[in-house]
Length: 67
Image (tube, rainbow, N blue to C red):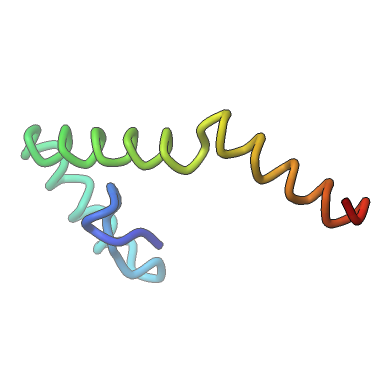
């Protein structure tokens, strides 16, 4: 589940009408849809940058090798 401010939409996963309502909102409100898309893109690049993933991979290697 994603926070609204982090490029996602909160809805009850057991309520298909809730999801449908959010989809319709995105289809009707292009500015909101674009904002969510841009936030999601930004978050993805921050969370999964090559530099960050390499750093985290090296940390795991160091944990297992004891260096």
